[in-house]
Image 1: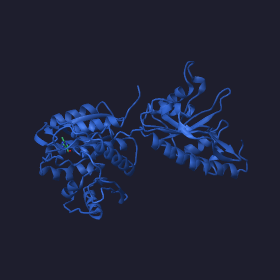
Image 2: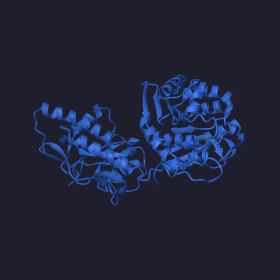
Image 3: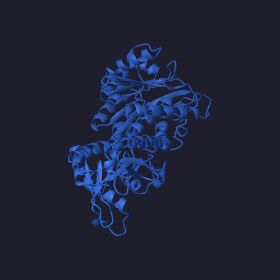
Image 4: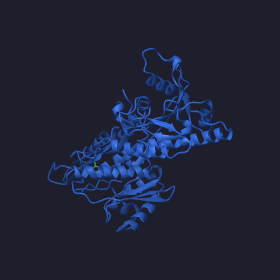
Length: 454
Ligand SMILES: Cc1ncc(CO)c(N)n1
């Protein structure tokens, strides 16, 4: 059994199956996460509008969240339809009880018409929930409502985003619908704006806000930065709108399965690895870390099952006249050693998808410790007979550390070179750690005037 990222939606049900909880769970599944839910309200709804809404008692909402969070680890969740002040403050109470990082979709109305929130709930949203939340994702009309400002262009959308951030929420994304369909991302801490360009696309939009915020939640849970997650969520919702199908007489529902990255993120993995390989090739210190058997760098797609889902350098990274040389192409299935390490680590933490192996020495481990990298090791002597060394060794090092460390090393064995592996979220991330280590190691080596051995 492999471990999976578990996320949650706290939202209303749409009997028409296009928005709310139903859209959120489809989106979570499409992105390889396990979705859980707390239903706030049961709407009788179709593609033409909302006929009625029945709010669940606050105790029932609280119980659903307690049931899920007392069992599963929910770091990231999203909220949708919170129709009353009472429901909104209940959600705020539960979010702080479990320390959840919350993505708030400030749902106000259905695409086909029909209010989903009582006006009084807006004040509670701003006063009780937003100050505890990570990001809020209003569309233009919701941003107008939350900020009290008019929005007719990007500059005004930026001003509204900054005003909404005044509630205490860490970030604001004002989505689409501008003259040029771009999204405005504002991060309170750095006061930085990122504008994500877009085009108007044809297709049904029922459930688009829900699907956008649910995908954003998954991307954040996978460890992406906010602008990166926002770029991916935009790409996801564009495909979901383009893939919408006519199911009734009104506004067509978005299709989160069409938004599923058709290559399961393979393209992004190759791009990240290519950039990492380029950085390694131009480093004048990485060569000091290359072991006898060569280095390799590898990265897996989210939800990787076997080595075919892990890309690496076909012929390894070797040292040529002291400098790193990347030999061969980067492709899926190219590594077994580093791939096994990543696959084993992903069972413990699905966000750890990349690794690079480098030479072992006590001095290098000492540098890692000075850099505050967490380290763990395994001893080949302890390996059970039938085990596969990299699977067993990685699991052994992780279990003794209690979580996936930055560094896993072993001191080798008969005919086995000792080795250090740097683990992390992506190829660029492990590359920058390895290069920092190599710069310090090179400095020590050259200071003591001992030529790098080969
Ligand atoms: C239950 C529910 N939540 C959100 C929306 C917004 O799309 C909707 N139409 N229905």
